[in-house]
Image 1: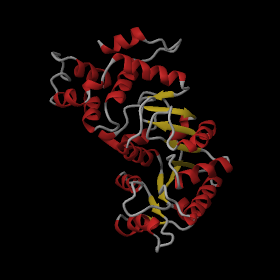
Image 2 (image 1 turned 45 degrees about the vertical axis):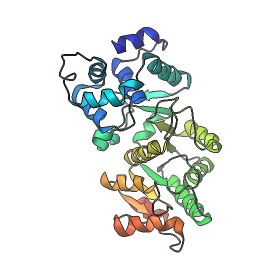
Image 3 (image 1 turned 60 degrees about the horizontal axis):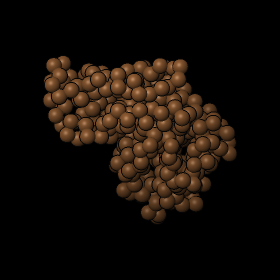
Image 4 (image 1 turned 90 degrees about the vertical axis):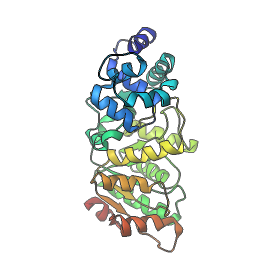
Length: 308
């Protein structure tokens, strides 16, 4: 049995690791984040029973008879190995990360709103309790204009002074301005990474992300040792929206991937705002689109963001 094989192989010190945690780690190493087929299987049978059924070709349990398994065996089973799961757990421990599952007291209840695209597990560095704190997601384009960075600093610093936790990604542009403002104003930040905790993209933001881990929290649903991809950046946007109380897009192009964060927030029934900014620039066409076509609220001041 896979869980027993992992337990026999790994040593995590004095703290035992539960079967559910091992199974969720395994699912995170073999399936893409938020895979609705895997999430549905786990919801029906539990992570351990679902994984055991995946690996048992002739099982007689209800999970083994589930029609979803045939598709999953073809798509994700080739990625599974005991060594891969063991390596992930060891990297979690040696990297100083905490692994959260839905049974952990610091698991953020808000991600349940994602339904069958919710994360299997979350890797965190820092104060995991902040994942449940009232928070504002501030994010936007990697190609921020001087105006966009100025507005971002103004909004982030004002919201920090009002006691909000500020959440973002770790990309260039608007995200970088958020992180730098949080460090300058000693704010509590949440950073959602689209890659494992042992990596930061872009590399020049590594120090900013490390600073967040000392006063806030860095979180990822991607196990350590796995690389980023365009798909995982998009999935990270959905997690950012689900973790936060409200979302504000500071600056974004018409087809910007950051609009996914706003659209997810709106779909989840969360308040969402956008800064219209300089309407003559391509860099803010996405914010105008959110306001005109998706019902995002116009944000021009800290008061506007605070009252969303």
